[in-house]
Image 1 (cartoon, rainbow, N blue to C red):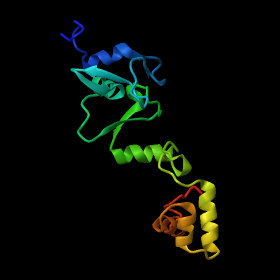
Image 2 (image 1 turned 90 degrees about the horizontal axis):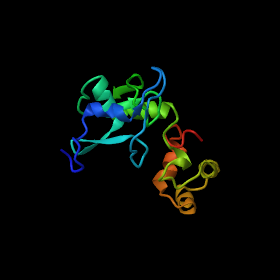
Image 3 (image 1 turned 60 degrees about the vertical axis):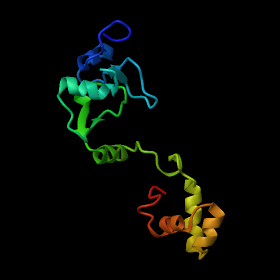
Image 4 (image 1 turned 45 degrees about the vertical axis):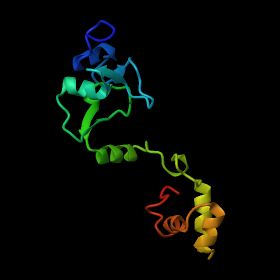
Length: 158
């Protein structure tokens, strides 16, 4: 028994908090959400992500090192038909292909804007030194080199 007098949740209890709809629709988690928007539930005194519990309950065990990814990109979705297993690299590639990853000025660590990158490239093409540009824009000279010498890898969307 748990501290509240009821038995602890099991993996199968995940379905009590899921709004099951048509097979092709997202089945939304109705319970608690994590700070980043994923459904979560306590199972055997351990907080677990709802979509992982749904996958385990409907499909089976998740091998070590694999993620349960969403085809629908809905963090609250628990429909097993929308879930698939993949590595972290698979998940990142999928998110990147769908334009879901923050890049450029939208990235939380960005110090530059797209306009600043265009200006850096133009001024470097005009002969301004990497050191002068680094001082002007408040970044390191290696970042200036990366932006101007390898644009296909750095700020490639600009």
